[in-house]
Length: 136
Length: 124
Image (tube, rainbow over all chains, first blue to last red; front, side, top):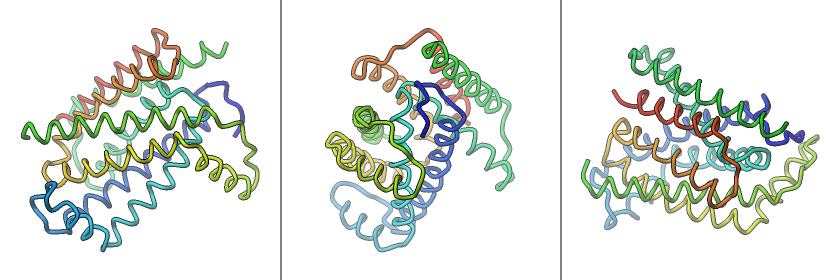
């Protein structure tokens, strides 16, 4: 990767979005795996039973392998920019999830949620500008 | 949502914040690696795995994930989701105090916008 001098370059930004997409899918697989265990009341007492039932399904392992990929991608991102930049920029996942639920699930996004998306975009714009100032 | 679940979520959030800080500390020690071939990427991955702080972060994320699994089995994601915005404040403060990152007005304002946006998106 090119030295970015801490800037939120298009390459770094794309990497962050990639980790967001991969994480969304991983969580989907985990949720499915957790429900498939048929253990309604998970606590500390039956936790290992719960875990072993999760591990017997494929969804759990797909989720884990997504997490492994994400781990390396995220460290690569962090080697280039500040955590206080990388982390809030990762909130694009909220926009991705909203868009995916409109396109694939036909869900409605409320005006309040659109406002929220606008706020997130504005926030990332400011954060990205804060890195340009720093690099100058 | 019971108090027990709320505390579990808060604890999981703290674990996750700790993980990010340890990862960042580890990532800071990486040199700018050449990434031209697949071999370079594999070498880069092994360099990451040789950093002790990164492993501390991994232990933290395992604890956090175990807590999340219990939370997910109990609560709907839509309830747990807005609480995620706390994380952004924790990370902002932690990157200032533990990582010595310079925070200017734009970065703080941007983060607050993001937090507000998440609360709006996540609340139905």
